[in-house]
Length: 240
Length: 285
Image (cartoon, rainbow over all chains, first blue to last red; front, top):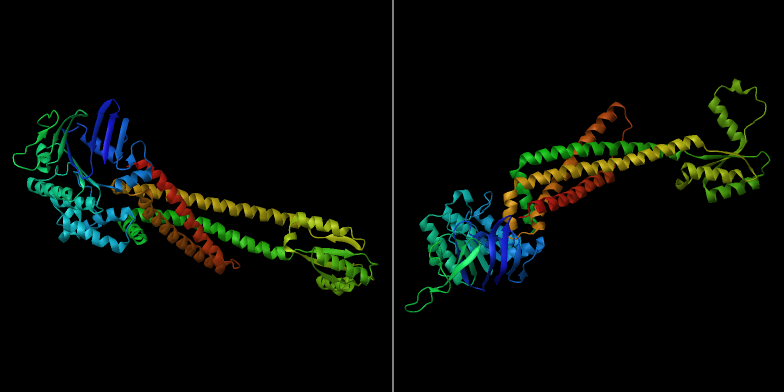
């Protein structure tokens, strides 16, 4: 699904990612944990092709790294659902219109087909009663749920979340994490980057640790069954 | 999907009224100047056609030409150059007498000195200096022909004037194109910059350049169409005012007016797509 092969990303003299290799399967849940500036967001931006690797190959589904054309890049992004820490909703549109925009962008649905899809996504995130509200009328938690509805409305194979609970108070953060767990349990692959270890633990997926642009360790998810614990397959730094 | 684009264009129209009105005023100014040129050209062209219709070649016949010879010449002229009308010596004298007016002035002339002639109304394709000169040269070689006159200098000047007007029409077209391109390009650039955040979000959600650009292009086309119609309205008011004062000024025919609006809209579409391609690459989200 997503593969990084010896990917290095430099920003001038500074190294953002240093020869990073990893792979994520379909339907998998992966958390990338690390402190600010460790290189987590670079990983997301490489996947969405906002930036290009200095060397190495990034594969996302059938899209193989290198320099994609603008139209190929747009197609790639339509296969992803992206959630940002700062929500990135359009303030001049209602919640419904924000979510509908993602459907319109695919160009696959007529106007009358958009409505049921949007309503279904809003119902999934519990915002059906806020569909006519504008983002500035919502709480931070509601905004993030609207952003999640926008990310999942086209049923993407993988959802990318960049610190989705970063701007939320604990209760809203728990709600959002529960929502993301549900989306993953329904079949979507989930890649989440965060500075908070408790978020990684709450999601229960494979956790990769990033420090100074390198992958420094990996923790496998909790296995079901009596007495199962996190199985450490690498050198976990313990805290991030 | 098309309804979505129209709705987006309308949303932008409502939300950025200041920018829209500025663009409209600039476009109205540019298109009014171009439409003014067009009105000038149309009236000049109309006047030229009236003058051109009166252009004719006069073929003076020798005195001894028989009726059969005259008919043969007439047939040749009609076949090669245009409609020929015979004016006998007597008709020529009659016309001359009427032009002079005072019969006492003509009493001293004891014999009609005027020759019979054939007046040839030339075919439209021959109504220019080079063709008329060639026709006159060929006709002058007929043995029955005494002389050929067609007002060479006058025709040459008329042709020069027509060429200048043609160049004026091209310059006017280029001026209009440049003005529309300039205004649309800068309006689109400003418009996209104003909504840069929105464009970036759309791009990150996987919107193609076409998806992002179409509402902007719709908006530009709509603004240009409105500006073109307003410019024509202003021109009509101007033409009515001038006609009331000095008369004889015609408004543009419907076909010209429609072509003007169509050309402006086409230009706006091309300009907006060009501008959007450049601006969106600049944003590169």
